[in-house]
Amino acid sequence: MSSKTNLFRIFVLMLTLVATGCSAAGLTDTPGDPTSTAPETEPTASPSAPPTSEPTPSPAPSDSEVPRAAAEAFDTDFSKHTVSFDEVTRVLPKDRIPAIDEPQFVAVDGADVWLDNEEPVLAVEIEGDAKAYPVQILMWHEIVNDELADVPVAVTYCPLCNTGIVFRRTLELEAEAEERVLDFGTTGRLRFSNLIMYDRQTESWWQQASGEAIAGTLTGEELTFLPSSMIAWGDFKSQHPEGEVLSRETGYDRDYGQNPYVGYDEPESEPFLYQGPETPGELPQVARVLGVELNGEAVAFPYDVLQDVRVVNDVVGGEPIAVFWQPGTASALDSSSVAQGDDVGAANAFSRELDGQTLTFRAEDTPEGSRIVDDQTGTRWNILGEGVDGELEARQLESVVAVNHFWFSWAAFHPETELYAPDTGSVDGEGTSEAADTELASDFEINLYQGEEEFGESTVMFSDVLAEGKPVILNFWAGLCPICRNELPELEAAYEAHGDSILFVGVDVGPFVNLGSREDGRELLDELEITYPAGSTPDQTVLRDFQVLGTPTTHFVLPSGESIERLTGAVGEGRLRSNVEELLERSDSS
Image (cartoon, rainbow, N blue to C red; front, side, top):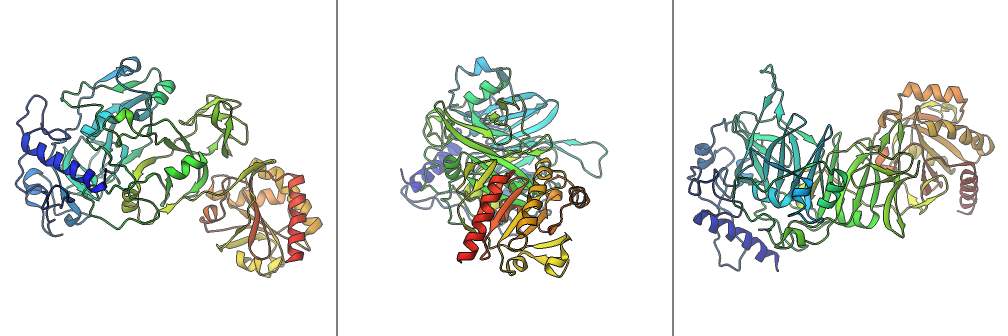
């Protein structure tokens, strides 16, 4: 089925059902009132070509002009807005896709009758209160106003962007003494093909992908993202046998389990009614990615890559994270039956910090299948970040807010995003290493704690170190890192033996990974009587540029700037000795 056919099918479905009172997402504004519609005078988008052509949306209003139908349907201050109304496309009237305001829930056993193990659900857990929201229901309602552990939440899903996002639906406003609780509905509008919600208290418009109020009284306010996971039903019920599941008894008559967006995520498909920035060409527009944004840095992890590597150890915004992927979750947007969709797998992101140490993870194949283990303890972990066997059994990794997107959507709302590309690595010895030669093209500043006499000044660039014409052992460490404490004396011994031929440089990244201050770093050097050059850097991007996936991380660098090995974790005396020999041999022969 071609992408144009898919788009036209969705488009005609919406238009036909708007006219007949039976929209793809439902036209009734209230249960039991099939003729009720919201007042709208602005014309909806309509096709201007025969059925074989792609639909064309209606012209958008100018930036300064508030759309007439919006002004009539929403009682808010549209003079406040942070986006151009040119970017907004009206598809359906207000609330024609009805949010669920009084959700009902059933036990796992009850839901198991109508949910297949592979079906995707949006899983949320707050303080032990775990709930699953089946995508087969969310795709017809897009918003569920709910509470978990007495926390008001909005569970949202935009099928056009494949974004399942959970927000805390409370705001702390300076002018109000107490938190304001908001309830959300659907505007019937899209921006960059993404759902625009509205709150019923002020009728301000909110962008689902960003959680920001983009027009109306609350413009500029932001909702708090809460961790959630798009996983298979079978994984949820295994992890949370006492959990609750959103019931099909919604008060609306819908074809739950049927997908009205058949074939929408085919590789050649195009986003429905997308009017936004040009999508970067590294991936197809509807390629699945897991998006992570921390401390101002955004990274997209492509599902195709995750399927190959299964586990990623990375640093985003200075925070060490892991991304896990496993097969067994169906696409909700592929087949006419949600349960019969292609297996696209599931991905989740977690902090790699636990009990003061930074873990590194790997996927290993066993006769029973692939499993995820950490290098430090050998504990086995599941897709939800729980230790299931080993020293850390029953321990839970802290979830990182990570959102499934189609590539076009993530790139549109995160134009500065990085796209993750895997390293070729292997597990060897005491740590995890990358053995392939890699040119270190990035430069960074080092503010020396000690060793100024080696370079003639207290602040040097890494390029100045390479300019000395010697091989370099570049060690990233932290003042409160237990493994670093054990390793630094071994590096000192190697420095005393080979310091004339090899430059040793230690870079303290403790402040970036919450493992000590610069003062902690200095104190550790003094305590262990380390004498080789060491200092800190103000440039947090070294964590990503030099793939510092944990502390310590050590690069063995030729004078040319090639890293012959990057090793995360303890190097060990044997590995250190062999790498020193290789550095000297390859430097002499170059």
